[in-house]
Structures are given as structure tokens and as C-alpha cells.
Image: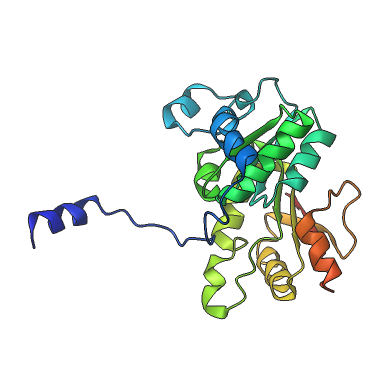
Length: 239
């Protein structure tokens, strides 16, 4: 084994299964490029283990005001739902995780248009952020219209699975909510089955084609409905 190969072996760190697809789509237009350069750095969460240990109020301290509670959306897509919830709930701090750059840029447009000051963004793998959060710090978490990964060989790439359910259970407060939604029938069945196996952690309060009263519709959701797909909305409460 060469010195270079030995070095690579020594520095190798196992990487978890990647749960998302591409990071970038079409080239960004002028406004979105500006927002990525100017606004995103102001809203981006930078993880620092020492800081997290030093400041017990993290993640509430990420926001300019002291929010009454903190919510998390995993994979916010175009950001319509996240921005809508942030606008409806100004006393709440809303964190969004999304590795797809075009989606991040779309959320930044919503943030600028509605002058939101209660949004923070982690533009990468949500699992890394969740693992850095303190116990029982979230009042609500959303995983909405995630990639269904329909092929059986890709099942391990679906976000709602035992290890991630345990991750979410650790950071969601007792009585806090986990909201799921999908218009992919196979994924809906999968999520029901996975959450049923976590009945010691979560109780199902809502499983219906009718969205919750405070639901904020998204462009992707409406396109699915127009195409004849039926979305289902699941709500679980942390025990």
C-alpha cells in the first residue's frame, strides 16, 4: 500500500446513506443569485459544537427575537409552506433544511418578499443539524412531500425510517408535533408502517386526505392534485 493510500485509509470516515438527489438544477436567475450571495449568509446556520455546549438556549438564540418555540421543516422544497408558516406564526422561529440550491433560492425570495425575520436555513443534510440540536428543543417538525424513492432497492433512502424517527423523537418535546404528508401512495403506506413501529414514541392524531386547519399549500402539492394524485396528511404527537 502506497503512502497516499495509507493516508486515505487513515482519514476515511463512513458516510451515511445519502437521502437526497441532486443539489442544483437550472442556473439561477439574477435575483436568486443575489439572494444566495447576500441574504443566505445572514440566515445560514453554522454548526459549532463548542458554541452549542456553551449556550444552552441554542437554537432559540439563532433568531433576532426570542421565539416562543422553534419548528423545523426537513426538505422544504420551494419554501412556500415554510415561509407561509413563518408569516402566520411570527412568534415562532422556523428552521428549514434543504440541500437543493434552487429550493433554497426560492425560499430566500419568499423571505425577502414578506420581510420574514424568523427564518433560519441549514442548506445541507438535515440529519447533521438534527444531531447537533439539544434534546426536546422543537415544538413541531414537518417532513412534507419528501422524495418517495419508489424502487425497493432505494427504500433505505426514504427519510422516515427507524433511525431518523429516533432522531426526531429526541429533539421534539413531549406533546410536540411531527407532521408528514405525501401524494405517493407507496410512501404513505411506508410512513404509516414505520410510525406504527414507533408507537412507543409517537401517537397518531390525524391521518386523512384533509389537511390540518393551519395548512399552507405548496405548488408541488397543487400540481399533484391537478394530476389526479391524492395527498395524505399525517400528524403525530410526541409521547
